[in-house]
Length: 272
Image 1 (cartoon, rainbow, N blue to C red):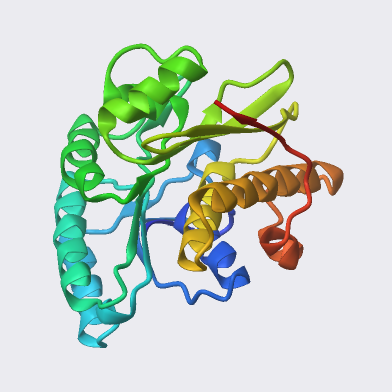
Image 2: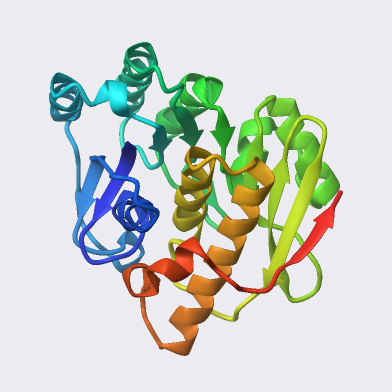
């Protein structure tokens, strides 16, 4: 189940994650928090899902006895603090209904460099205090990690320390790596691993959404966190490179198909 944005004409947010999960043969259920026609970075004017409608959609999913079948919950963008409260309550009901011990993956979509916070402060506060504590895994970018953990995050060592202050296993996107590289940083209780790949001059939005969905799919499939993170890193690199090669304005998630499930993009892997 995905609780995040629906963007009709862009491969970002929950709409993109549906296609990633489907490629892994995981049936997606998207309950949208906001509906837009295109990427908001291009000036889209969408509409947040009213809290009462958001609650009714979740209740309808629950009424079809689907809460007990959930293997994975990904939370992403929220437009309103009330939506976060509704999501937190739904997570409790999903956990109570399921015998599958569903994986709860919180992608705290709060902000990024250089703009900083791009959701309402009360939304960021609700995500930090209501959803992060319920997470099995978090997938923040570097800015979001710094926001959640406090303190400066300027290098790999400080990123690992920040994740451990939060007390949650994390897969951190946009992690610092070597010259000309960008990385994913996996932080577990006793280990940390960097997955680095070449940084492209330009890449479409949505790689973080792809990473979260790919990583969550791997955990559902029974991969170890390290193996799931490695595959997610390869998939993100492969998708970004394909977008560049094909001059695609969006990540070509559907066209890549099985290549997302069995990506072959090169990585530099470093145990920290």
